[in-house]
Length: 389
Image 1 (cartoon, rainbow, N blue to C red):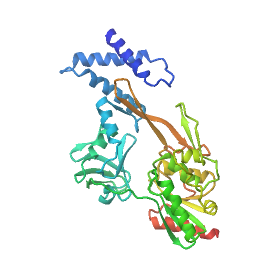
Image 2: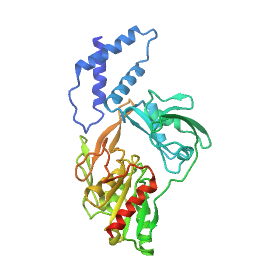
Image 3: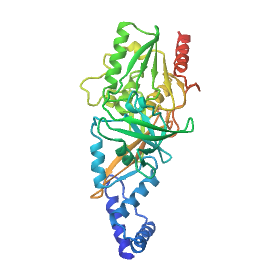
Image 4: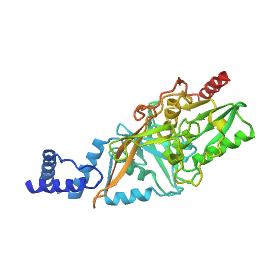
């Protein structure tokens, strides 16, 4: 028993040293001895002797999921190689994001993607992919089930909480174009800017849309539609907020225990266009920057989209119409372990300019609209802006 305990203590010390920038704290010897004891009992008493690596991997998985239920994951070396391969562009896709809340996986369909067109809804809870149940699987394992070659199909079994019904939805994997920002005129005096997600080209495309429409026919107010937007790149979110805020004001703050915690992101080029050759906002019309605004949100507005909504709300730059947003403002970090795979965990949270917590809380509207009629929410914002003129 003692040799096993000392071996596990040494292994734990090796794993703790994986992050050389993090302060190494004393390891809980008593608890690790309990772990070693359980390990020894299983090795000696199970009908079939378990594999050493599988036992340790299971222990690490349990630790990650216990400490960080929604985002904690452990990858063996083989799983980590698959995970890094999965991060590369894939021609075949269902157009889905997989998230976890309260330990339960749920789906976020990408606008106009195969899953959305097949009938998958935001917050559909995933129970099975074809005949494989997802209970007990880690997020990356579920995502691997969703992936496949273009043209192949999978049947997703989901529970829809809004109607308390179970649905089987067949989705074909295929290549598809991601929707970009669009601009329309619900009435001549008001422009409605829709941003479905925040990607590398979003800031450039958005500024071009608004600038070109302004030159064609100036408008007197603007509605920013972030309903259903799952967020995306932080730089793009900071940049879109900067379009409508005074230079250098705080957009969001990075908080946690990581070395770069406390970092403040501002409406400045160094924070929204670090790698760009030119400032995307350099020739953005000053009049458009200061227009009366409204922002449309719902329970599917999350992450980077919430950063934008919270910044415009805190700076009293826009009224927020709709329903409280999802509340996803966490930053995940993946750290490789020496010869032992990798772990993924929540390392920090975003807070609003006023210091308000977003994660798990969301951004509350200033004008709450319970109706799920999208047109009704849009018209309420139009009416409010027209009344200001």
